[in-house]
Amino acid sequence: MKESVRMERYAQRAVDKRRKEEDSNRKIGQFVLIKYLAQGDHLCEALKKMSQMERQMYISQHTELIESSDGAEGINVVWCPNSQVLTHRLLSSELRKEFEGQHYLSSWVRKVGPHQYEALRTTLRDRLERRVAVRQHQKNQLAIDFIEANVG
Image (cartoon, rainbow, N blue to C red; front, side, top):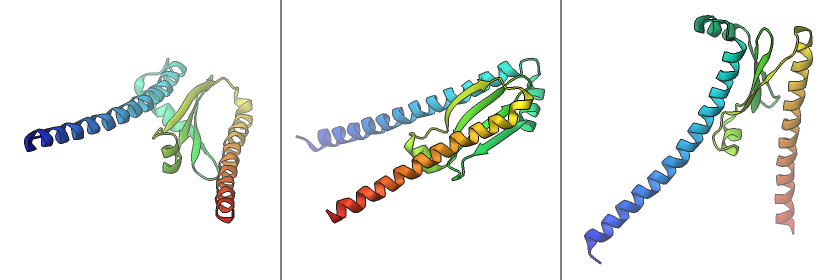
C-alpha cells in the first residue's frame, strides 16, 4: 500500500471520529435546548397576558431556587399568579456527567394556591432530600463493594 493512500485513510478515520463526537454533542445540546424551551413554553402560557419585558421582570422578581442539602441539584420555581412553573435542575458538574451533560431534567406546571406555597416548598425539599439520601446510599454501597472486593 502506498504511503499516500495510507495517510489518506488515516486522515479520513480522524474526520469520521471527530464527526461522531460532534454528533453526540449536538444531540445533547438539542436535548438541553428542548428542556429549556419547555420551561419557556410553560412560562409563556402562565404569563401570557404580560408583555415580554413585564414577563422578564416578573420572572426575575418571583423566582426561587430550592437546593438540595449537598448542592448537587435543585428545583427552580417561578411563582406565577395562578400556577407555578417548576424546573428540576442539575447544579453540580458530577451529577451532570452522570446525566450526559444535561442541565435540566424536566419542567412542569403545578396549580397551587398562595396558602399552599409553604407546603409545596416542603414537598420539593423532601423530594430533593430523598434523592440526596439515595445518592449517599449508592456511594456507601460502592465503598462497601470495593472493600469486600479487596478483602476477598
